[in-house]
Length: 213
Image 1 (cartoon, rainbow, N blue to C red):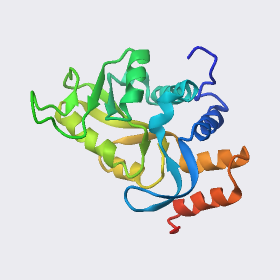
Image 2: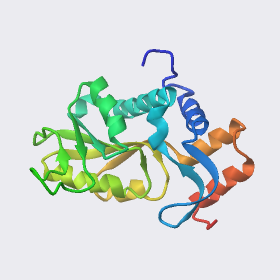
Image 3: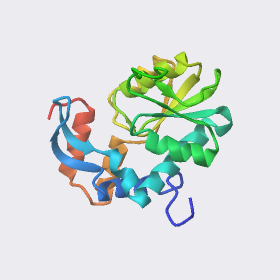
Image 4: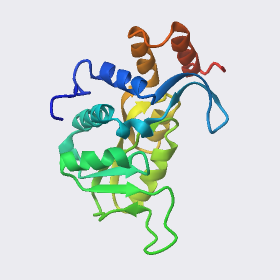
């Protein structure tokens, strides 16, 4: 980072990230119906983050903080989950000078029929990168092909954990989930910043507890 944007890994970085996500509309509060048909008290669209340079810089620095926790020297490759994870794995691989891979949602039906793209070397210790975690399904679906290709996968990093079982589900697959923040912390931060109402905060908290909306 060039110093003009707060580093998300520093004190206050999570506050800055919460503010940025709310400002650009990547995080909205209200009543929403998700693709699954489930009702939600908030809506996340982290795919718009790269369209805002300040928010993008904060997000990338947040992931760098997570990689630092894992140990940069313990990793030999960065693998993005298509498509949202690729927008983060690309700058991470560049900044860390690590090889980048990416995992397709399904195996190609032509050419070499690959699902993992990139020059994979067997034994590479690889971290999986995605935008968020809900149940951990998208990450788990990337871990299998990476391991089949010869990668050693023990860690996954996301910007946000929706706290809907991903950590436990991935642990069962032998993968540690590292999240920079979660929906509960974001909601509390935005309430303290007076950007959302107490009713918004309570709705998120009830949803986290499994109370139907």
